[in-house]
Image (spheres, rainbow, N blue to C red):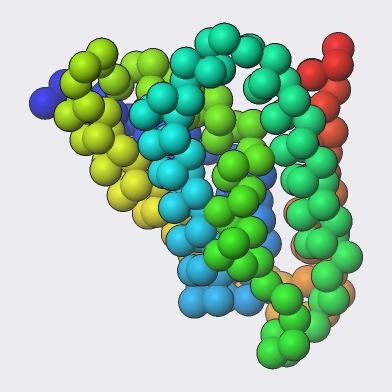
Length: 197
C-alpha cells in the first residue's frame, strides 16, 4: 500500500505542477473550452506514458551511457516550447472559435517527447519504481501515472474554461493569450539559460 501511495504521490506531483504542457492546456481551455482541449490533453497523456514506457523498457541504459543526450533534448524541447508559446501569444482573440487552430492530439504527444520536465520526471520515475528482471512494479506505476496524469491535465483544462468567465471580451482574451504565450516563452528561455550557464 505504501508503494501505491508513493507512486500516486510522485505521479500527481509531476502531473499537476505547472509546466509548459499545463500552460498550453489552460490557454486552450480558456480559448476553446474543455471539449476542444480534450484531444490535446489525451495526446499529452499518451505522449508522457509512451515516453515513460520507452525509457523504462530500455532507453534509460542509453541515457546512462550518453548523459549529454538530455542536454541536447533540453535545447530542442525549449525551442519547440518557444514555438508553442509564439502560437498562443499570436493567436487571434476571437470569441468565435470555429476557424481558430486549437492545440491538437499530435502536438500534445510531441510536446511531451520534447519537454525536458517530462524526460526528467520519466527518468526519475523509472529509477524509483522499477526493478531489474521484474516489470510488474514498473507497469503498475505506468498504469497509475496514466490515470493521474490524465485527470491532472484535464483539471487544468477545467481551470482554463473557468477563466472564460473573466475573458468575456476580445481584449481580455488577447491579453490572456499574450501573457500565457510569453510565460511559456520565458519558461523555455529559462531552460535554455540553465543549460548554457
